[in-house]
Length: 238
Image (cartoon, one colour):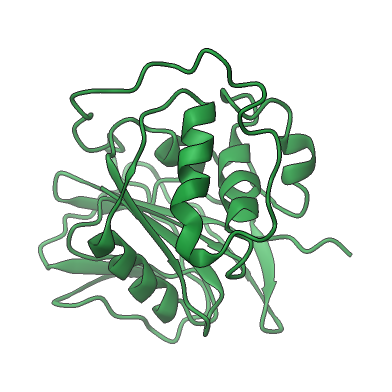
């Protein structure tokens, strides 16, 4: 039996916090602790202005001084009217002249502490500028992962401008990064057909938001983490 894995994405723009799958996450399901959960789509005409320090997206918008997680099993994604990213970086790395062989395999033994090598490997393959490993974003990602008990629960902590989530283990980051996220757009530069196998077990349901965030040149920093109590990979970007 193939296990279908669910994904989740969050971004913040100019005071608006939003989970921005494209199109809206709809019908994605994953078996989690014996219970089925699914995403519901929201109208793109809705928006939520964040006035508190951070927001946890769990069923509905929750505004609080610090991120909180409710007992609700599954989060729901809401789309804001604006999904533009943060200001683009002032400089970018020249496109790689040879990408067909630079990232043509996925390692199954990458530890959680070495995620940045995976990020750099596939950014280079796509001819994208490197992202800087950031300890604040790692802390934010770990907090979100720790609090994602029973589902994928977003927290927009201070310093984070985008976030992607997916189930995994401490040694399968590359499988999650490529198969779970990048392969939403299998025709992107640098993937070179690897998604034919890397995407097995993942259900995208038309989503492209995770890949769009991770291949954006609007972000310059990244921090990823996985908590042992939830086995949820979280990557925060800024």
